[in-house]
Image 1 (cartoon, rainbow, N blue to C red):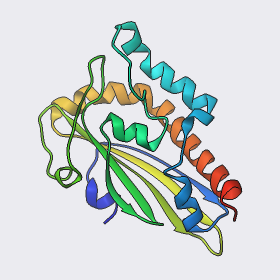
Image 2 (cartoon, rainbow, N blue to C red; image 1 turned 180 degrees about the vertical axis):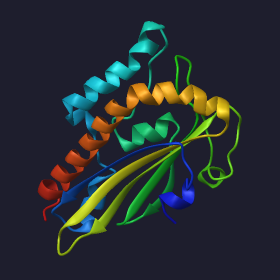
Image 3 (cartoon, one colour; image 1 turned 60 degrees about the horizontal axis):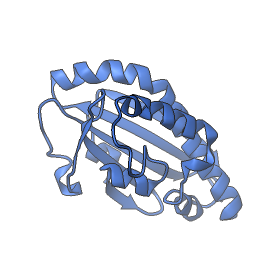
Image 4 (cartoon, one colour; image 1 turned 180 degrees about the horizontal axis):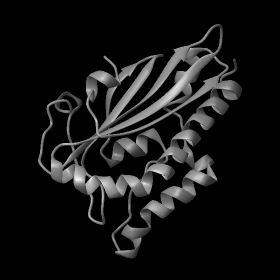
Length: 187
């Protein structure tokens, strides 16, 4: 399976890639250890994203907005596929826009068939494609599907606002993975 199997049709998409000079296994080991607290840019953008909730005096106990893969899982993301050392796919369902977001807790087996009016699905991946000896193209793609016209209409302005920042975060993900795979795990 691949990202295409989990969310083949989508309304919104973000894609980024980077060449990493390391073997696929070394790159793949860097993905679960990805810790975005090492990126001042990502920390700043995630704090900006939390601002509406903080201003609304919502309780912010918990992991915050996904500094690590474990944090994303605690927020409601699920691992859909872990095909080492090629692809990691994770997903989320809910209404995650606006001041009162909601996340539906689902099992991975429920992701493809999940349907609830007013909700959306997100599927994202890290894909490692060898490009010769100890050199790979590493990409991350995020796809979002509004499950009905109302969800697409509500998500569109939110996506227009966050997409540039979402792209910056994803490029930072790839930068940190590259740094870790090329230094901490060798090449």
